[in-house]
Image (cartoon, rainbow, N blue to C red; front, side, top):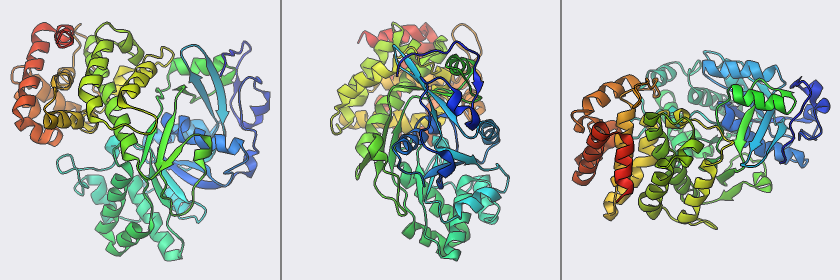
Amino acid sequence: MKDHMHKNSPMKLNAANLDAFPETILRPRYDRADLRAGIVHIGVGNFHRGHQAWYLHRLMQQGLAHDWAIIGAGVRATDATMRDKLLAQDCLTTLIELSANSSGAEIIGSMIDFLPVEDDNAALIAQLAQADIRIVSLTVTEGGYFIHPATKGFDATHPDIMHDAANPTTPRTAFGAIVAALKLRKEMGLRAFTALSCDNLVTNGDILRQTVVSLAHLSDPALADWIDNTCSFPNSMVDCIVPATGQNELALAKGFGVDDAAPVTHEDFRQWVIEDHFCAGRPDWDKVGAQFTNDVHAFEAMKIRILNGGHQVISVPAQVLGIDTISGCMEHNLLGPLFLKIAHEEIAPHVDAVPDMTPSAYVKLIQRRCANPMIVDTTRRVAFDGSSRHPGFVLPSIRDGLAAGTSVDGLALIEAAWARMCAGTREDGAVIAPNDPFWADLNVIALRAKDNPAAWLSMTHIYGDLAENARFVAAFKTALRRIWADGMSAAIQNHLNR
């Protein structure tokens, strides 16, 4: 894409104005009136619109997949806000691709409706029960799958799950709505649909299956068996850096001549690797760059360990040091080198190569992507929900390093930096606003760990038996004491000097 900023006043984004936007803006070449729904997507945030919805839009641009259009859905109050914005612009979205040297805009039209957001999810259940819906996809965040923090199994004790088990026709959760709809489909003699997780979880399809089948079993064991035997839950790996939308992003869209209430900026890179297991058909996403495979694990392990784990390596100390953006981290004289050292020495050695990509080459790719100065991705966003992200993204590399007898000192330093961040203040004294669903608990423990580092590792729901590993415990305690005594920068420099 080339850089074409528009000088005239921006026009409202809607179907009526599509043909009037500058010719430099790509837009749907297909007749959206002819599109028919095939997918319901639950959790319509920026990532979905910049990733899955884009792949489908590009297929539609080729005259394909016109019976696979997306209907948006959600179960949270924030979803209702997004619904209002998107319906007001006919479910169109402006995507702004930002490379290091240029930018370009594209309007995508693969979404055609957005369901009402209701406490009992009646509209969602009714839509999911329609025969033409063949895929239900989700982006509900890594922490949204009701995984028990200690056992990593299904958390049947969560109040929302207990509600859905007792009230299966009026559920609160997306998974309860899926179960209720599948019950209707079974009763009507309709086939099941594919449930497709697009969240950053290793074996995300297996986890989604666990959540849906386990929830169904609480109220209807026979239905649970039918779901387990007839539904598909493909594992997938998704990748594209998509920042949150703020005033900067709104202004960028207007610079292209588009008044979009919810534009999406994204990097000049996308990847989608999907297990080819769909019980009711699928779009040919591979014709626009997605990869279908029977082995997603190696791809997702590389991405989650190096990109998502690497994001924690830089964003957590950055929050303490007051560095606001990921690209700012990569430019920093300590954090950029810290990423490379830890990624090369403590993460990549425990990652298998995938076709056409070695772990060391992938580290260089992530370095380039994270350094893109046009992507204003905040360290606050990336460091959010550490109680889910550290167990999923960082601790597996520590476990592998301990098992292999290799260094874990750098990753222990990052865990100590997280404990320091959760103390709630930056080194300049500024307050770090709550940034985790369990922030209040983390804050209390982090302050206790200032004098007693072992207190942090006592969170067995996060660290499990790592708190009993003498080598990791010693590295963690040393790092946290050094951070509090000498400061974050000195602690990082000490590690870099090794």
